[in-house]
Image 1 (cartoon, rainbow, N blue to C red):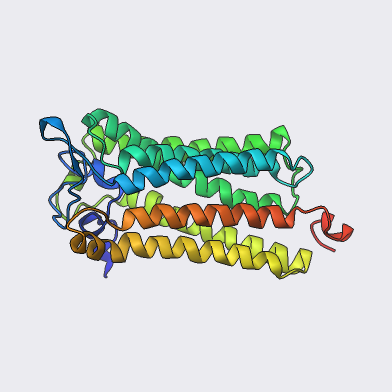
Image 2 (tube, rainbow, N blue to C red; image 1 turned 120 degrees about the vertical axis):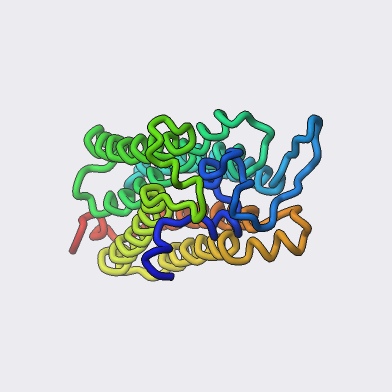
Length: 295
């Protein structure tokens, strides 16, 4: 791609339905100078549309499923990292609520859509950071569930959330005008690119590596790796649908759906498998030796 492509969102917004496109478009929606297949949606009054209805419905399903996982995790009072896992699930619920209004094309005012987009992208990086820290919790460097453990996790996540959210909101509301050039092709915004595209990927890879080392070296088990690897594969498949297959789906369905619907579905399945993985390594029937970080 070359260094000149780094930080550009033109091709992403042309081929995919992404929340970031709402703050890179002069109309503050998924329509911008990048062109590409546009979702037609359901026609409403006053020339408005309700687009990506499938994604909206799946977001609602994701919220209900995650609430169920929260309730299930509450029963595992002796499980390592229970509070930390619950924090991850709560943050994921916030992401899905925001996705209803950022990826789902509701007839909202520009300011409301920009606000939801800032919260959405801010919570994406904060949530993936919290997930990575959940892996570190398993090593019992600090006692899990304590005010210190939870406080460090929440404060560090808030720093990422507020910092990322401010950049996105400043881009959308043009408070300082510093990011105004990102409205023009090729829609270059290096700060959002790093915080939204790259950093979460690094956190997710770190989570997988840390958890794999914990399971294989400390627990000496293989079965949980099936769930962990399954979660990674499902998440990757969702991204392939969103970034690669999406324009083909949109064109072949005349703009009725695109890859965002499948990204929501596979991400939900990935989160479920992450929870199952966590649940499997906190079962009460593991050997007593696994209670310590290392033998």
